[in-house]
Each structure stands twice: as structure tokens, then as C-alpha cells.
Length: 83
Image 1: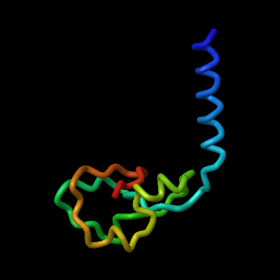
Image 2: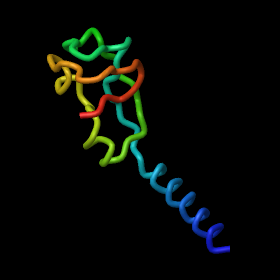
Image 3: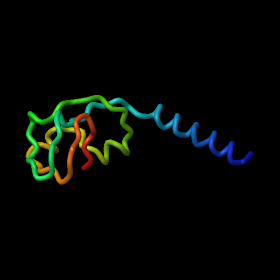
Image 4: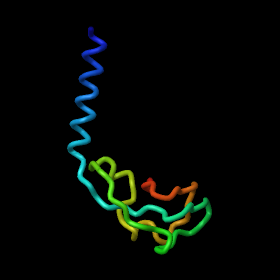
């Protein structure tokens, strides 16, 4: 019984935290960007994501922070880019 109650509580917390997420726009790659490639404005497109303050602190949410940087890992199209 305790395990079922704990699982229900975890599901409720996950639903609540998702409800608190704002939808914000973040830059994502249009195509695969490989390690060592400099990131240009033409390589990026904006896409809306549900985002909490914690997510916004760990992901790039503006193009200005990305342009001119060099990719350290492979960046996939449509995925948010970690700082």
C-alpha cells in the first residue's frame, strides 16, 4: 500500500510542476551541428518549449548567447541547447 501511495504522490508532483512551467521560445538547431562547428544565426530556429526557471537557467534561451560559440557536442535539430 505504501508504494502505491508514493507512486501516486510522485505522479501528482510531476503534474503540478509541469503545470507551473511557462511556455517560452528557445533557439534550436535547424540541422545537425557537429562538434567544432561555429554556431551562426542561420543554423538556428526558434521553437516554443514548456520551461521552468530551473530549465531556463540550464538552457540557452536567446540566440545572442549562442552565436559565435563553437559546439562541444553534436546538437540535434529541434532540441534545446544546454549551457
